[in-house]
Length: 279
Image (cartoon, rainbow, N blue to C red):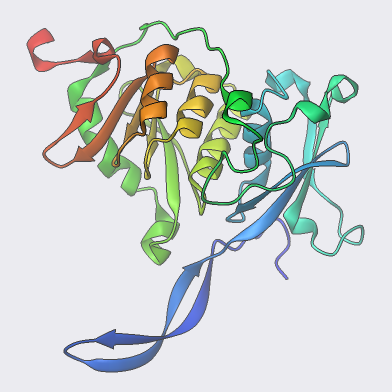
């Protein structure tokens, strides 16, 4: 068993590879690891999510922040895996100690008991419970079009486990100049975003001048997490959903989608992007 400090993101697995021009070959392939993570506050279990092991503290903090259990870094006393001997799989249980744990209404948590790796909104009772009121983000910092053009390639350069397995989502943060800040990979899109937001909160970076790049589609819960963290620009290689666009428009987020080598779509708040005619 690997200790918490040595998480497994990929495992080798025996396969039979078929090629039309070469028959069948027995070999090995690398497969993305998916395991449950139980998140606890002061020892009380509040959520279980299926994730790729690694950066569990960031995932837990990002989850609590986007669920509005915590509002700032100062509320966090400690984040640690359970001690070996207390439980059978301490690497899959993480405990968050907060200064205000006695004030938390655990019944108000919207994603409890279980969340799948494929959908961050699973387990939420109703859509109304996750529709939060956001103060629209001001335009503030603008982003040059040429910087957006480079984001997918820059993000791909940091997706090491995806290159190995082809089975992970990624979320990366860049500054307004296109400078790389952080990249996290996970079997779940929402987990990857939670890890990035957890890193942002723990390191107290300036969210107002950042670009969130994601490898999958822009769904409602992804935009909700970005809005919670105050991230003004989301870039994705895939499509947004209608509800994601509604929330992005209301929250003041610039949402860029269908990013390909020959261009992309700007769905909301194009005024934040410096276009060639404006240069």
